[in-house]
Length: 232
Image 1 (cartoon, rainbow, N blue to C red):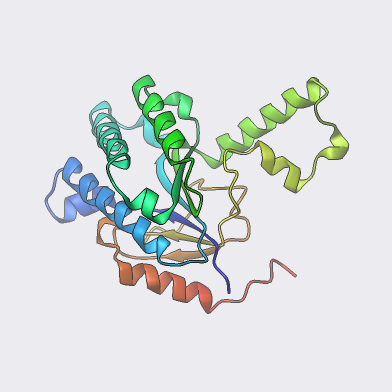
Image 2 (tube, rainbow, N blue to C red):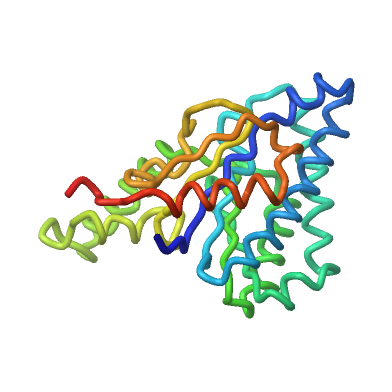
């Protein structure tokens, strides 16, 4: 089966830290390096045009101040690398950030805007980073935006269907054909709740920092062996 869109839930960084006697900053740094690897792996599959990473959930923002501060500092430094790494220009990768971005610090939001603007010229592959993201929040925010448009006479009830509703979601990209989650946890945890209704799911027992290129290929191969009938 053709695979054009893949979702990634990179889970298990904290358990990896505990298993390897690391602190969280070290483990998250290893996990971040794995995300950069994934950019190249995805680009190696010409049919994959969209990759969406569950980078930071809305619930993650309630973690301890110390851990959250470390996470945001790592992410901030990784955004700086976007302007230095040639992979975006060479591979034609555009970055898009989805979620309640307004819940993030002002300095980080400004840098996110700069990154989106810089990579907007590249359109071979779209990589979405879900930040401050919750599938339920996305649906609520979409419903609110729809209600505002209805109130202002910009849309009507007859215009509303499953496809038109997608226009109000954070993600403008095609629905994920495959969602991969690492660490052995077998749930989606609010990832692309609306869009993943018919996604194929693949769960790896490996923690995210341990997930390698061969593991990614194994997930892709598993998808290729399946038959999708979308309930028909």
